[in-house]
Image (cartoon, rainbow, N blue to C red; front, side, top):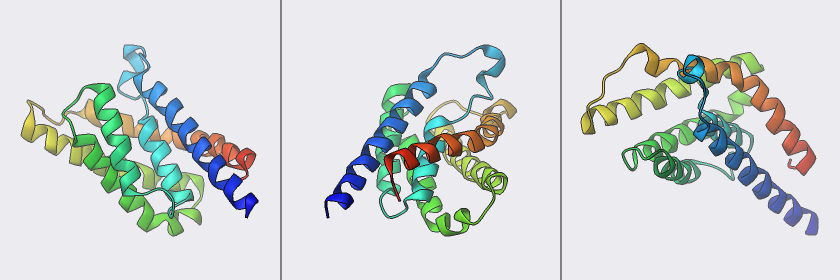
Length: 165
C-alpha cells in the first residue's frame, strides 16, 4: 500500500512540475520570427497527461488549467478553460487508440486536437471581441506538431524517473 501512495504522490509532483514548466514556456517572450509558431506548451502537457493517465486527469483538470492560463494571459475569462476541458475530454476518449499509435501519428492527432481548440477559442473570441481567423492564428499547430515527439520523450522520462505506471 505504501508503494501505491508513493506512486500517487510522485505522479502529482511530476504533473505539477511539468505544468509549471509549460506555463513558464507559455509566458516566455520569444522573437517575432518564431512567435506565431511557438507551441501551445500547456495544451501539449495536458494532452500528454490525459492520454497516459486518463483515469487521473480529465476535463476538470483541463478546465482548471484553462482558468489558470486565462488569468496569466489576461484574456477573456473562461474561453481557454472551455476549450481545454473539451480537449481533455476528447483525449480521454481516444487515449487507448493513442497508446498504439506511433509518435508521428500521435502528432497528427495532436494537430487535430489543437485545431479543434483553436476553432472553439476563435469562435468564442469572435463572439466576445473583435477577432478574425487569420493564417497566423493557426501556425502554432505546426510548432506544436514538431514539439510533440520531443515533449513525449521528456515527459516519458519524467514518468520513468518518478516510477509512474
